[in-house]
Length: 486
Image 1 (tube, rainbow, N blue to C red):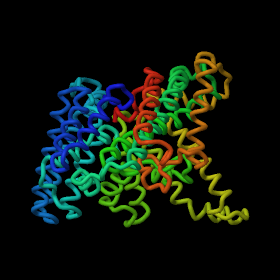
Image 2 (cartoon, helix red, strand yellow):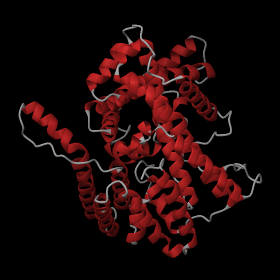
Image 3 (cartoon, one colour):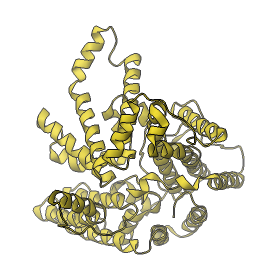
Image 4 (cartoon, rainbow, N blue to C red):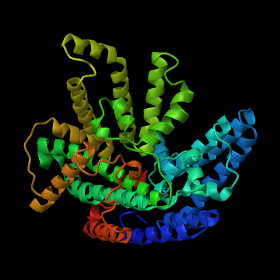
């Protein structure tokens, strides 16, 4: 069941209403059943996989919790992570590994399995593994109530595309969800509306031109191919942050505040800054469970470089079992290293030029350079192979003319696309009434949306009508959320 479906418009209000009617002590039963129903709507047999990951990590947490800080705890956590990670490797990476081994051996050494990638497996396995590691380290106590832990792993708003939550943040809220108030209803529905707008009115409208350009860059020409890379950068931001907004809004209606996952990433003044703003929960997970245990930046420049490249290699592989994802991750890591190790030299150059390194002019120049670099690297992410990525890059730098015929789908589509991009840009810069960091509740605002303008029932009706219109207007060819495949 995708967020942008009529089924979800029925599922969400029913789930919210029933959960709010039930006593708090038994509410977890309903939410757990709803979450499994949500996940099984793709393929019922997927429930066995997520249940297995839940059971293994739960038992690993119990064992580690009894021996926190000891070797037994570390062994239990390691075994649980190996089993959970093994499931992820089999379903997501075994085919990739087999293909490369066969290519090197120039023959069939391993049979490539014909398996379907379970939706959201990268998200909930990382979340479960993070929990076990935190228990083994003594950062948190093991959750003894299997029901609440199962709900932590499968909570439907963030189940298939994050954010990747920590147990100490999410489980207490599942045990004692916040009360439903007028402000929380406005806040939740507001975030859901913004998410649908990003997804349907912007990301899906951009998907058509991007698909056309990447399918035949030679026909598009140098200029339109470069434009396609920029458009994809906007598409993936609105698609992924749109999902996060819908997830955060849905969770808000259930009394839960999800972690912030985006913070205006295209305003970053450096690649490192970009990763502190983009997919924040994944960046935090990689920092806490990969980068710091490897030594972080505590063991000299060379070791820091190796650790950073290892993290970005894992980040690339996390996004997809293909070499173009690996290269995408490693190139980001390389730019982070260049940014870090040339900082003093660049600051000295700016000062010699009479400019303050942290001043507005320099920061804006860094923002522009970062955005262009990120757009260029998105080519490797969007392409279906390394060959496809190099084909796009070669076309951009060929400086050949091309045609926009058949790319943008008519004047009306262009107007809607540009209007949507304009609204998102204004919201990100804080000049429109939509300036809300994705995944952050509107309830923190001193001015909740539409407060005191209309009765709650009227607001609910307005949001419902608008959401229904957005869904009916959705472009079915581009309706799937991009990050659902990860």
